[in-house]
Image (cartoon, rainbow, N blue to C red; front, side, top):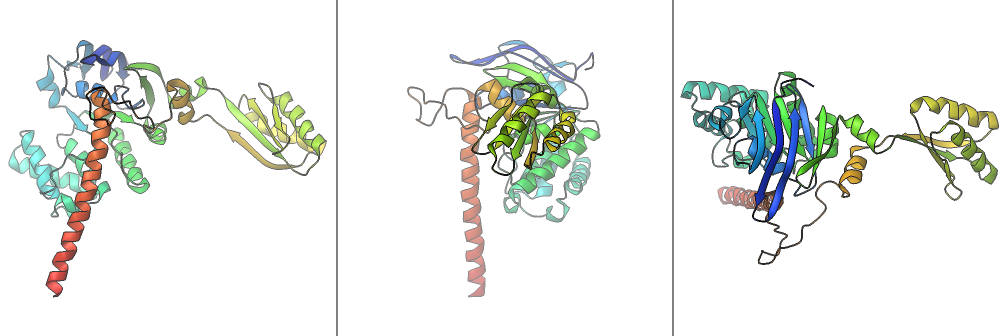
Length: 371
């Protein structure tokens, strides 16, 4: 860690009516790194991003980005940061080039500079061949890349990504991961909120787990995994002799770091181990006793295990908040983090419906031409 973090929050608080979205949130993000923020729906992730990107004023606490106070120095800060939300915020009626030029002009770039930067970003994000097409004709992955390109129009020092790969297929998600990794190599600092734990494991140098509006755990991915238990060795004993299972259990108990368990029906023997180094000793011990082995596997804790152990919930927003009195009956708790999750799903459904209608219109136009 550095003495001067790029992003720093201390005791950050935000409430909406009687709902407390942030309850003393403390974050620290070092320069040139990806900092992942994990948490279930309604944990306060989006509220934190909105405050850090100057879109929302906190009720209490402090937040500084690049040494600038997000409230008192908001205007100066906006010229140095980029933000990509949970869905593509591009104008579907404009072409890819026109969208990026528009963002450049909004950032008060000169017309010639905005166009040059737009062309550069379209090349970088492999959208140059589609630059003249309306954004409504883009695939979901292309729209997300265009949206990310728009957030880089001023080459920001800090980039806030609020669940940037939500709704993308695996191929498009992997492409987005490569783009983010390239940005960090070029010196950009990234704060990434996500519910895709594989995404955090692959990209994040450090992770903060958020629940109930506060950070409940922080560390590198490996450090967090170690907090929920070490490695586990599983052996499936071959043959059908019951004594072989018990012999295997004795061997694993000798080299393990905890009690060994055996399932006589599946013939699986398991034990926690201090690391992969004991694997060869276990195999050698079983071989000396003549115990046949049909399968050997070393399991490491995953971020899914971390998420479940620390929040008590599965990842990817599996829970549905209860509807409040007088609400719309769709789980509106008053927390914009909850509403954003719901609204984003509605927006994606609306865009899918619109894409279907556009495809039908295009087909009708082609039929008319044929006739």
